[in-house]
Length: 395
Length: 230
Image 1: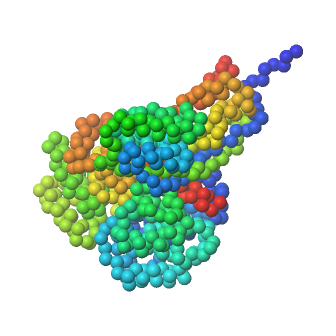
Image 2: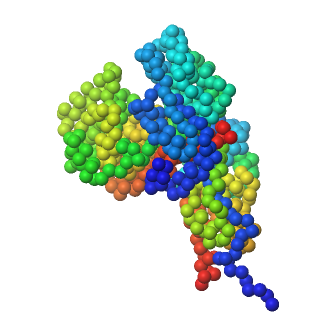
């Protein structure tokens, strides 16, 4: 399996991974998360855990279960740790901790390294034995957590041996060492594997997206944080000078904000046939792949974001990306080399026009973006980071 | 009678050269600067490993794409604070010219200090992000079986992961105290080619990519091998 990555990883990297793995043969590595489906940590763990096994570690992936109250609390706690205002009654927090006590009895928690992802399984650390090292792998931006949520949660985090964040700016103050590991994409997954031009055309045809004009594409949730309405306004500024088509694709939530944003976008699309709003199911990986490949320019004009990987996915497909100056976007987009980070609707419009005016830049930035992702945001880099963490903490 | 000179291509090294790649594990230091004075104050107190990470370590992290500024401090001042004057002054500080990390730290601190003495207010981040101090732990990865001749060394160098170029040309010199770098040292002591060793030692690794350094070393080695064949 790891050999499959030789054709996409930088030269020599797979050999480095194989050599690194020689030092951790037979080591037991346990990944704990709140679920196996959807995006976020699950999307990363799905290919990563089998690769770790292929490399000779005894890697397993366990999930915590619970009742609706448990999931409601973990969701609210995650949002509160990212700074949103949420009500977290003591009884709900006690129930969350108690559910994880029950989870602990069902799980085999002894391993050389236990990597606990995000909030749902986090309090399992209270049930740890003396053996092995425990690391909290946080994919959230915990830089400005809601005070009450953090004062409850911090006590658990400090029971770990270390924490891992995606960026230094996401890390709150802790009494344990904090390591930095960026998220990654799997270049062989349905979302990122190569597609033939024919496959792209067929998939776009099935989505009813015509390819007769340059496509501006933003993939992302229909939320204010992703600012799809700002993207529409940027497109309108560009449309005065260029015949382009805007595609806004994402998975809609059933919350009020999502429904409102979607309604506003549909209203805008009703008056302009070049605005295409696509509500996709959560497993529309191939469709997203095809849209990114068909795009002339990919937008990630978020105004608030976690690390996210939309920009890396688009750059892997050789596309320049114009992204908001937030979350992990400045880390992924090398300004003026692989795309642009912008601070406003006008900034996005200006950079779209700049690129459309200079088509040679589109090709050059696309090629640079693909190489940047090859080095920095592929799962092979993630594997080396986890192997290095295992060696550093366990040896 | 003098024995015929041994050919470079067949000369066997006393010690084989083992390429060592490396993986960098980054650690946050919970120290952040919002303005240039805080940058200077924190630069004085952070561990030397952090100074190394933000200067020499820059080349490991920017393998395929070199940017306009050769270290994290200059990049932050240019991109986030938008103070081009200090950015230029920090960018010209070549970390490879300093014998110790403390000397490098002094140069950086005095550069910021001198800049601030000429200003009436301290430039700070308005729309950008703070500077987050980090340090790294390097995990070494021995690669391959080892080269015993110059030709084997050349073939290994052409294929090895670029982190090995960083390890032997940057990490070995700056953090492990092997001033000549491992390539030059091995070619001098094990292969006995002082001129080639000196040329490799003189390669300017600042403001270039690891791939360019690899290409430069390969070209120097090829020159020697081809001269002999000719």
